[in-house]
Amino acid sequence: MAQKKDAKFIRGSTMRHVVVMSLSSSIGLVAVFLVDFVDMYFLSLLGEIELASAIGYAGSILFFTTSICIGLAIAMGALVSVSIGSGNIERTKHYLVNIYAVILVITIVLAFFIWMFIPALVSLLGAEGRSADLSIAYLRIMIPSMPIIGLAISSGAALRAVGDAKRSMFSTLAGGAVNAILDPFFIFTLDLGVEGAAIASVIARFTMLVFAFYPVYKHHQLLTRFKFKLFIQDIRPIFTIVIPAILTNIATPVANGYVTASMAKFGDSAVAGMAIIGRLIPVAFGVVYAVSGAVGPIIGQNFGAKDLKRVKRTITDAFVFVAGYVAIVSVILFFSSEYIGIIFNVDAEAGHLINIFCFYVAITFIFSGSTFVGNAAFNNLGKPNYSTLLNWGKATIGTIPFVYFGALWFQAPGILIGQAFGNLLFGGISILISYLLVNKLEKKNS
Image (cartoon, rainbow, N blue to C red; front, top):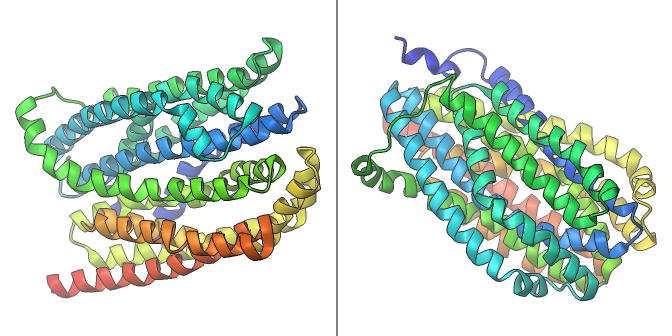
């Protein structure tokens, strides 16, 4: 009974669990993203359009590395939540330790190779001149901390999997607070510019790791001794989720890289506008970004407890929650778009892109949120390959032709609008397949 007590999501209101987990998870995420937004503001005060475009180019590569870390965290959350739902705490501990080992190996190797090829990657995105130099300087500092953010995000996922969203939130809040304090100090007081912003972010990542790992170790006592024999046994179930999850998550940054390269053809102002939008999106829609990681443990625990009716109800509640949240935020953005341009002192071209986003594109995040909910369902119901196929479909079929023809017909604004149409198409497909999967599982178990 003591072991079953930890499976807190198998009873009570599913909507309440969705709302509480999503909001509490998003608070920390939004805090981190808000600091990135403030980063952009501080750097804009230096008066160089190249700085904003440099962050845009660097952000595309960091988005790729962070997405890999999130993919690893998805495996952590899925395996831990399902094993807790089934009441197997010892299995949970071994999964957690072995996933930590996998995370370290993957992130160290990837960080090394990415660091070696930073100039080539920046050039591939279309960066030139000073924008390219600033991007390289920023990434040289940030990329080596990939293992730190990988462990931090996965520790947060482990906390959410056991229902401890509060401590997971505190870890990201702590990282955001440290970054917010150190940013102006390094950027202005020490006059380090873009390198100062990178140093502050690395220190913040270390802070997140400390605040996330400690409660996993001390409060929940989920760590156990590493045993190589069990590690070998766990490789298959871990990589069954890790590989599709990573492939799923890198689809979006690959698509984002194509969008950035397409926008680069219209100059630094267009890339700067896109970079500001890229920082605005996670602040405005941080709750939507949090839904996948927040809803996953709820689905996982109920699936582990073989309660598919609650699984379906959770998916429905998540869709409804996302739609309501995006609608409210889109109205706010509609009326505040001009102020965003003023805050960042953008030129007419960048300001026009921001207006296009706030007026027409923001509302389509309902369908981006639907994709996130679908990913959570697929990953926790034993079908991670569905997430991979849908996300790569969105990154290719749902991005390349829409962005290409959007740019051809409507220049830079057409890129934003084309990307939105792709989100709409694949978000709808994700909703449909989610319900078909649960219905199939219900028939199988009846």
